[in-house]
Length: 523
Image (cartoon, rainbow, N blue to C red; front, top):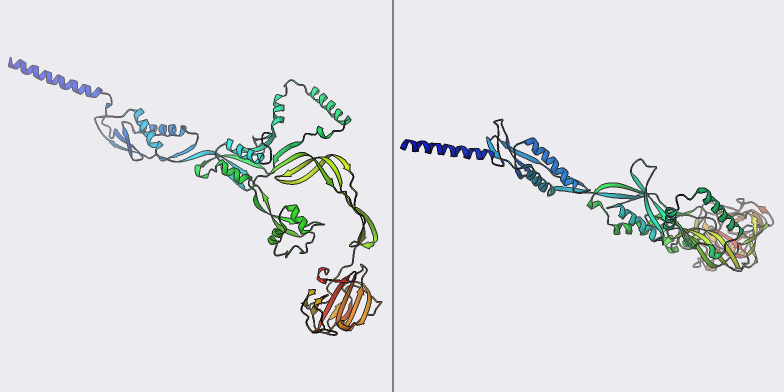
């Protein structure tokens, strides 16, 4: 009986052990491995343990899938730090994690390891200016703000279109009339071109037969467009390089001080230029202090003045049809006189302003008017033109009557240099050695040559334009009264005669018998 009990006990223990071993082999998560070297791997991603797996290649595949899943969760371009390491060992059997769990763990680690997100964005370029915005809608809002600034809201809209002339995916911008665009969309598809042309011709003929009245014109904005080429390119950029819509609108529409040049044309004065460029005259003088001293400074045709013009980064062209009433001046009527010089004029009739009603197409660049085309004009009161008689002959020129010399006394008020001398200098003095040649400043007839009291030896020359020049304090006179001289001809030698403080030439120009500053008339 003891023997049977022992056998039964042995059988029970053996069966129990076998059952336990079998259950262990088939338990979920445990795998039997062959003895082939490293066959059991602990997986780490960016230093964090993910789980265990029995196939190293499968871990690589799972990591690739995890990266794709994280990246596909956003339209942005995402950069992720993903370093995977594995510690392998050889085991007979072991517990492994299921692939779904490992994949989830990998995705969690990768989401926390995003280095940088490159946002899909749009770069808008106008000339040298560029701004990066987060979306196409922001680009359109920015451009629409530039249009709305000049009254185009609800009438003109910005459309982005592909630039057919560019190889790459580049957009450009058009400004379209909302009503016209809607009318095109509503046009019946089957409306024949022949009927359209017929109705168009009938309408044109009706317009020809009856002249438009003021109420027939469509006043207001007619057209708008951007003055510069606009380019929009898709790009992927970090958020730090994107500009907010509010800041972009401020940058693009705010007027900036833009350096420019103005070329002087016939008839210009500093005050007229100031009005033309809308810059105060004192600021123009300040910006050109190397060439301009004050408002009386001389400017000549072709001179270039430095100015700063306020302009936005993106300029808008527009045409407005306007009705207005105004006083107006008739154009000046000139009567040519071939016996007079061009500097001789006479007003034959004084002008009187007229009054008129006008419809005109006015073109603007930003806030500046650039042209005006009158479409209809009704004269309420006719303007009387100014009639001016003017000469056609080129007047004589005047040159410095001496070579070299130091300007020792200017025209105008001064302290008397010596007893008997005038405190108001009626000419200019150049200090030169006695005997220096004196030349005729302009061609003419010698009116006087000889002694002239305080002038000492003096020469007067009358010129064809009615002016007279005087040369004083001479040491020797080389011409006689009544003699005709040419410009640049030697007429005397300088000296120190009359009321004089030293060797020099005193020179005067008289217009209508009164002395003027000679330096303003010398070439």
